[in-house]
Image (spheres, rainbow, N blue to C red):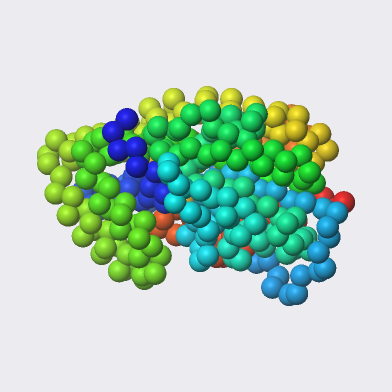
Length: 345
């Protein structure tokens, strides 16, 4: 496919911004207020209110007998936080340096501290750009059988299976990229890849450092700089208000099937670990089909958690930034939810 360097960074960091902003740019009052309600409206009552942040008091002594492993995508890995560690690879990125060297403020670090674990017993296997299909494949051999052409990612980590086999607690947060990656590729096609200019601004990290007013000004300038033709604008508008529904409809059955495969394979690798399914949050609920899509996935995860005797943790009030990923407070919120859900040894 064209633009294979449309890598995990682009897919995970820019997705919702690129999907939501053109609608504002072309028609500031495009959606009525009732369509901008947060996704939390359809969440279960158990997640109705934000929890207090994880305490910052001194952590208990490390317990070498217990291991926590977090599986997932860039949200898990801590993309957007200081000290996210990776190295350039021949294809995409190598996130192995982040497995035990993850940011202090990401939720894996906070959960580890809450359980009294050192970094050899709190492992972050979050992989930017990962999809449910990718993870389902990796749980067999530790490797993706082939490059994900749309995401531009290719991960080979046999050691992840060893981590999972010795884990006492395994959290899984995966699936957001399943629809976002093809949607972002579709947006690239609609704009003849002019949207990559805005993505570059986001990926530079500048938007996280600016105030909200400056952020929107930067976005609007970047949209204007795209200089879209009428045909490109029409294609983008069509994608936002009809193409997105098609993508969500086509993706949902694939994602749910992969989630079942993931749960089954993790259980085969480790019959005794507590498995936690972490829910989804939709940080830009401006497009109704996306709100519906993530709500359906949350309901599905809750159901399979019951079916397979797992733990489901909803996180509807996660605070995120313009680049989709959780803020520091967002990571604290997720960590608190997880620590409260983890069973005593």
